[in-house]
Image 1 (cartoon, rainbow, N blue to C red):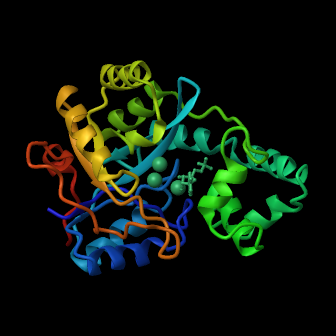
Image 2 (image 1 turned 180 degrees about the vertical axis):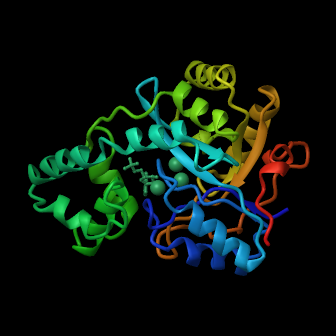
Length: 283
Ligand code: AMP
Ligand code: MN
Ligand code: MN
Ligand code: MN
C-alpha cells in the first residue's frame, strides 16, 4: 500500500496548506495519508476533510519534538483522538518556548552580522506559535545569505553554529503517553538522523518501548537505502511496527515527494495493520 504517514503543512514548517497537500498526495497515488505537523494538530480537521472529499483514507498525525540524552528526537503520533485534552495541552506546552528561542537565535545571528532575522523569519511563518529553524532558513536563502536551506543549517543553525540555541522539548515518556493515551500509536521518526552511538540508540529504543512506543520509521525521505536496510533489522530486533513517510515540506525544498517512496520490506509489519479502526474512511 502506498501509505505516506509523515509530512508538514504551513501549520508548522511546510509551505503548502493542508488542502493542497491532500490534493498532491492523491495525485501522487497515496492510498493512506497522515499530516504530521511539528508539535501541532491545528491542521488535522482541514486535512481530514480534504482527504475525505478526495476519497483518500486518513490517519490523524503529529510529530512531537523530544529531548532525549540532550539530543532532539522526533516522535510521530498516528491515529489519536485530536480532541484529547492531555494531548492538546502537551502539544501547546511543547510549542511554548519557540518564540523566545527564535529571538535568541536571531541574537546569535546578529553577532555574525546577520540582522533582523527574527522579523525576517516571521514573514515565512504560517502559525505564530510555530516559528522553527526552517523559517529562518527560508529567510536566509531569500535574502541571499545562502543558496539553499541545507547550507543555512550547516553554516548557521546546527550545534556550535551562531544561530543554534539549545532547547528543552518534551520528554520521551510524556510524548509517548500523550499519543498513546489519546488512542494513537507512537513511532520513532527517521532514526538514522540522530547519529547516536550503539549504547544511546539502545537506550532510546528500549525506553521508547518501555513507555509504550510501538513503531519506527524505516522508509522515509530522511533515510538512504542503507539506512532503511539497517532499521529494518532494528524494527525486527525490537519487535516494532514499521512506518513509511516522505517527510515532505515543500515542492522547492524536499527531495522526496508525497508518496514517492520505496515499499516497506515485506518482512516487516506495517504500522497501519494496527491502526485499522483509527483510519478515517472517506464519506
Ligand atoms: P526546529 O523544530 O525549529 O528545530 O526545526 C527543525 C526542522 O528543521 C526539521 O523539522 C526540518 O524541517 C528542518 N531541518 C533540520 N535539519 C535540516 C537540514 N540539515 N536541512 C534542512 N532542513 C533541516
Ligand atoms: Mn520540519
Ligand atoms: Mn523530524
Ligand atoms: Mn518531519
